[in-house]
Length: 212
Image (cartoon, rainbow, N blue to C red; front, side):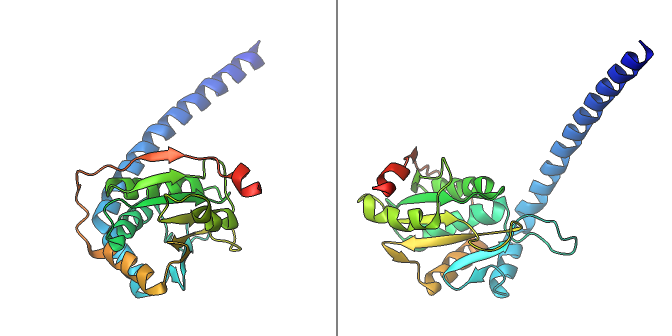
């Protein structure tokens, strides 16, 4: 009986600790979000200026902080702004893009940030990453659906699990490097106040078509 009471006490104590940790975590997230909203433009400017995340025809950067001295370069706000930058760089009023992601633990989170940014600019999104998609699948999806203007993949290819990135298909080709530079410039410098626009998102299971 004493051992059972001790186990029950530890269980309840553990639950109390989890509850307190959850509440504290929510406060930390709110504080971090507030700071991010103030500082993110400068962070993107820094990444662009030092070419830390712009690697040729795609973006790469740390997304999971497991090295104490290495700061995350890709987070929700950065991907959100990149989504809005893509929309503004296109100049199209009825842009429609497919969005995929790889199997990294932070890819779904970053994909959602990208989608949120695109939707806020009135871009219509086809989510082909409801289950995880490979880069060749995303690269070929624009040839299978005539209603797409391009595709974006959240992936860091062969880099280790602490990294993530973004690959762009513009039309049916890789996005030119100068266009990516413009996307990042707009993400860092444009006034990203609410536009009143709202794009639509749909999900398509592209895998059966890809296997054909």
